[in-house]
Image 1 (cartoon, rainbow, N blue to C red):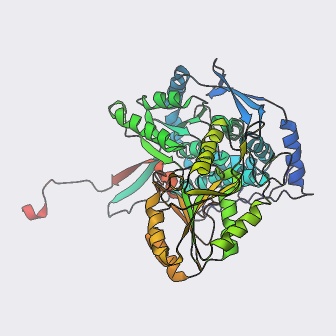
Image 2: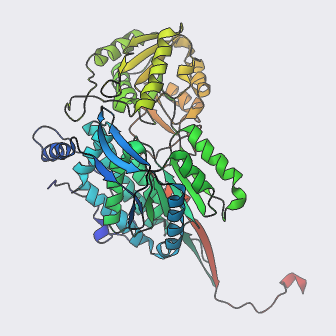
Image 3: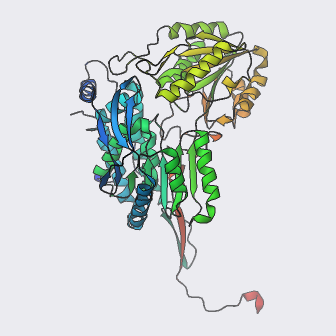
Length: 555
């Protein structure tokens, strides 16, 4: 049995101070180095899944439902391997799930927050311990992640989401209004009146668990639409939640066609919220549907969305070159550039570009792209599916044909066995080229080399080039430049890094999210997010009876 020291066993008996502060720490990241017990257990879990096809139903309450619309999740690096067989929920089943959830809502919402929090605390401990390697293996095989990328996602981040959100929910109860002479005031943090639709992406197992788990924690009922390309790991997380005490009908597990799911939930009078991570066009579509159906709803739905970014690294002449190189390689190419926060545009002064370029090329030659299960030395693996591969290939073809773009390294791709794309570095002579504006979501980094003495203009360029504003990083040793960049780029990134890469946010340390086209910036991973899924009720109780109706000045 994998032995992991659980830093918070709060579900067994919450340890709180007089101010109801729950003691929680970030989950340690395991090394999986040669000879460790976690590596041996992970290898066994991976071996158990080789060639296997898991059957995953829709789940409404305790009922496992199969429709005739059968689909398959395929491994990105070996698309002949059907990882999971599942089915799409149809409109009738989605509506059935809505009504079952709404019927269960009041009883769940009336449970003390400590009871609801214990479900997440227990689930976190289960994932930290006995189910850790199983969920990691499903994430590696199903979503094409390397060991470390699976560990920081499907273990550490997911565990942190559950523990810290449970902590924040309990501590929110202590946020109470002032009392006055003769009166007692209180705030009840109710769930939303209706259901929340949680629409999850493929790239982080943790995000799916958080999108569904956090609203449920706050007393809501949830319809969870997992990504087709993350089905196996998502279902494992759902089963952990149920086995940890989550009652039936609180989270319904509903794989579905995107438009069918969106059309159905947005046409229901009971829609109370949408918790979304995905593309800008999809989120805009849902938003428009909600707007068109406003007269249908019993309440104004809450919309929270994270939609990706065109994330930047700005390099000043005073920057540490090695830090720039290593941070950019990791940010741009880890998980094949398929992180919402991945660096895809970089601005380097002409005085440093020869050094930075050589450093990038030296590392690029050593990067291995391959099967993350058979070869633990792979830095990243295939991109997620054929649509992603096709989209990235079009950008590579565009780069090869554009007079303003030069491919410095990489540029090749092959989908014969898996959806493999080489890590690609492109230099542009046009800072307004579309490749500097649009999200690619693949291992493609484009560099604009700017005149050293025009760094202030370049900062303004970064701020205005792309519609996104998710993450960004400034590399400089000159504090005056750092202060200036922080001012100019204040609205260019929701997560802003100084002398660090644009990826790697940690729950409770760097709550995540951005504005502009990147989303609603509701900061999952921070204490603010749990409040988003409540409908507070202020209650005043008067202890001194009112004996008259006139005011003193009237006498």
